[in-house]
Image 1 (cartoon, rainbow, N blue to C red):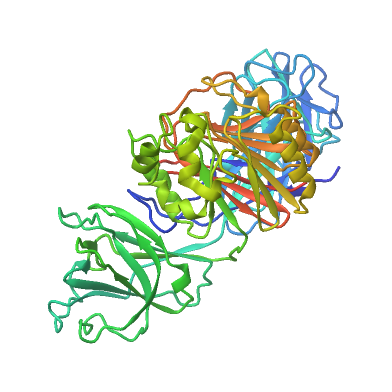
Image 2: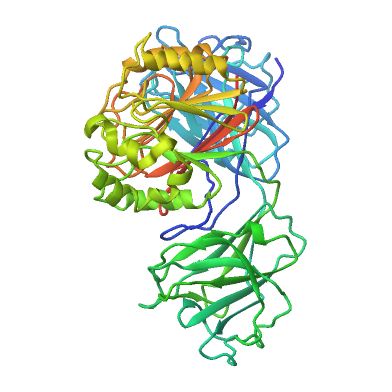
Length: 610
């Protein structure tokens, strides 16, 4: 079997930073949207000390053991990558045979020798395991996927050779490339990113119309008296896929603004000079392309200005209608403004972004997750239930949800949760979201987005076979002609949560969706993030027809613990608030868990539709 390059599946904790309309709080240097590719081995084999002259290259299993010693070797041919490697994960599937599990899954190391052959490798001629240890696995279970970070061994295109070893006498057996669950090398890359600083920046002040502030270390934005900031960048011949303006507020008590950090627009002229611009001769500005929310002192903020940047010399203006002005550091300061340009192609495919378990009123986590959504002004927003806490009252919606996620209400397609139903019939939920929640009191509806059919269901009413909801779902699925299918509701069918058990009553819905080849099922309820492999209704791996299940209850509620890890759980986190974003292509989808500002956990990948 020759090595193959197949469509991307997963990249746990991919190192890409989402940038957007406004990020509240400190932000790191942004990096580009990523591309993920999965490579299958071109060779894999086990070298066994007990049979030193035997070649096991055609075996369906790969052994790793400390006594008698067994070592597994894998070789990948990485080709066709463009951009820089940002993540590399080795994914292994433990065999389902009795005894395949182990208390120690082994250690992965690099191997410099890439000339060994699958059909010739034995214990006697095995290459030296001469590379650094890249990572180790603890206890592993039968029939489950595991991944190890091997980023240090993957620089880019080329041949990669790895070895799995163990000093533990409780050996483990993984599926080989001759099996249905072959090892995978999952590589994430990012296109080139270039950062430009201004060639000119200054402020025009209505209170001093003839004054020039070109050498000032601060840039002012205010609504009364009016101050406007102008910036000019020369990005040369850079091809623009995304442009992000980064600004740093001055470290001064009056530098922040509760009213907003200003709106960014394209200036009409690029001929103004830093030493000559005044209020009297300032260029006119176009319509705003993006805005910043409230800003605080001594903090970096980012705003997506792609719509105003085409190449060459770029002139931008920042204006505000708020009397509470903001002050940013100028290019004369240490924290200069930046224009971060990502090269490559852009996608016009629809984006779906959201999360569950959101507004509690006792933390600012929902404010932070809402700030991420601000960065995707054209995206459709979904919720996964428990929109407010604790009892789903009209007051909670007005006081908690409206103040944060409420600004997306017009483009939100919600889902109800058990806390929403703590108010009789979830009446405040239906009153707040109106027609966007489907028929009032029912809680299930569907809509189309590009080539996708999206179904929002209600786990708080009967889901039994033959129930009104299950019959409606089957009729709805039979009527759609869309290529790809996603469903969402509150309580998860599968979960590793230590706080809530899997919701078995969702089974009839899962069955109906499976029969219609659903691609994705989303849920909340558990206050954590978890991604599963593609599963059939019993939870068994089914890459041909199964739906990939996600739990995304990280919108703002307090974190919950994990219990026993469920089979085929591929990625988990319970200490990071964030949102789950989907880019819906014509016959596939990309997912990305985006953390709130200051957090680093990420998970992303791509899968074809059935």
